[in-house]
Image (cartoon, rainbow, N blue to C red):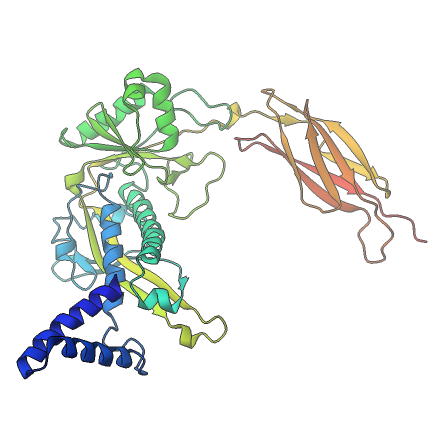
Length: 444
């Protein structure tokens, strides 16, 4: 089709040119298309006259994908202050924010500069994707299939990161009068020690928002997956309307809140302290849920850049590499219109594993030993060994078989050699470490 339209366009132009200089239409069309064909084989600088054009198309496609990624989500409808961004910097005073908001925000070290008049300049955060290899043909031609795949993968990565960072920024670092951080009070989940969210907890969120004088219309509540499950257990009304839009995460309305579900909310410790953005949670640390009032929050999108290295500069792999960088920020204008609820933790409610924690004196020959372990709640266990000379299997009744290989004499070896086996109850943080010792064979 591209070739057909190119020939058609050339022919129309050639006929008009031929008529102007007195050449017949057929002769003119054949001659000029012939010249165009010959010219296509002439060596020309790479990407002459089109440098940057296709780059603009690629970035334009990604911009559309990123905009679509916010539509209908809990970030949609938050006042967009992108028009106030200048050189990827936005001034807090321009968005109607109180500079004190930065005191409570510990999401990331914001690049800020306080100006003499009390204003604070905030540099938008960077969201960079890892590079994707693309061939010359794919990079320099408008390959829509390839563009769609790259746009989807890079767009999704940036969007997920933006949501995660925005959620972290909208959740307070800890409990204060203006930034309530409350704990759940429900029954304890025996598998995790997590206290479930109750109806009273949800009403407490509403009460805290009322105390902050937050208008009732337009309040939003973003629930983590665990809290959604909790509410489904006690609210038939919520269960009936529960149907998460896989694209937006929106569920419905409950107690005056527009309800959304988001799986990547911040983690909080058992004492109610927010963990760092990329922290790995440990026992007793769970995702939170949070409520906020969109008019008292702002977001801003800055520049989007495409980076690529040419295959000519890669003699080893002959590949182009492409990635993207976008600037974005989402923050509360004033830290007095949001509530966080985290799951309280009761370690005493967790199940236990009992049995031998040391197997020593095992013979140097190959063989196996069996031990039976019990759990306080009757759950099955799993076992894993950290040594290649020892394998473990679990049979019904939590009977664990420790199978060893032979251990011949070794002047440089340890006597005995030691392996560690970890027993665990699936779905919980409960583990039991078992040390296994095998004696060395006699010196020949």
